[in-house]
Image (cartoon, rainbow, N blue to C red; front, top):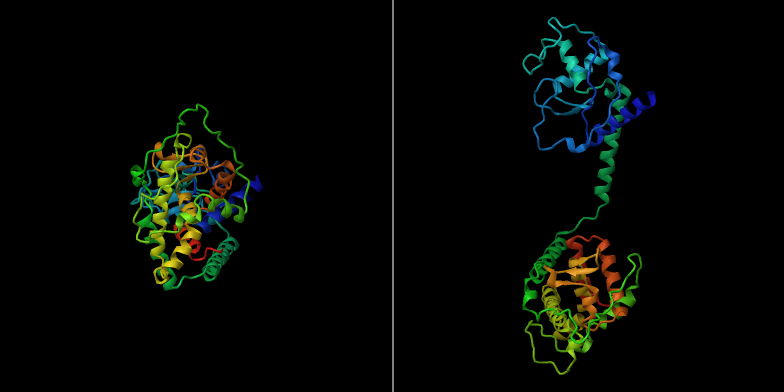
Length: 374
């Protein structure tokens, strides 16, 4: 029993220091009319945290006055908190001058100390939670130590200069202007077709290990195969589409998703160009240098951007509705092999687990564009 009391005392001390919202009113209720100070040692159980609504007004459980928080394991006002502490330290014995069942209110709480103390016990206030002088000093030292630790963390946290913060703001604005999280533009693409004409056997759905990893160099090599560098030789920095460049005839009946995904990639490249043009200093480069940087980084930036819609649970890209939810099987129906797709999926899963902030995300995209060799 002594060990349990010590644990409860330590628990209360930690609540005082860290202001935890999980504070409980004990369920102990006085039953014996001849109660005394030793009755305070009754054991209690901690209720469920959901019992308390932080938005509800706090009312003192003793007198109904405005409560200032949990004191000695019960929600009370400062007045009843002090009264209970003084009574316990003095080991006071009070006698009710009436019938022993006075109704305690804010206005009459000073009239009957016996019934007021009785009410304190009934709502769960416990003398074990009253700190000794040594514990009060320990509490102060721990609070001071915590403040010093927080101050040290703040001093070690890197501070952004005004220029750095300005660049991040520009990149965030550039991203918001060139990335539509509603994916409404996808309706302008050629519609996705998932059934292969002339075949009732769709490509198999691969199974990738969620714990596997791939090297950055392998992923980079694989990603370049998605779009040949020659396709970027005539990049239009004015974002004007040219739909009359097709010189290759493909049997689209065997690649039903190719037209739709080709439109998606073309659209994504144009958005990457728009993002790059808003990177501070990018427009100062020659057109040739801009093209070189975009040729080297566009696919990587597309992969970074697509991570926002990637779903780790089913390894798909969810872009609004079921028509624009792309599985690995959909990508194979555009002509890509599993050997190419596997490192892409591993990359998406690893990146998703980083839980990047949006600021980190846009900085990473900008770094990919201006430092393609990294």
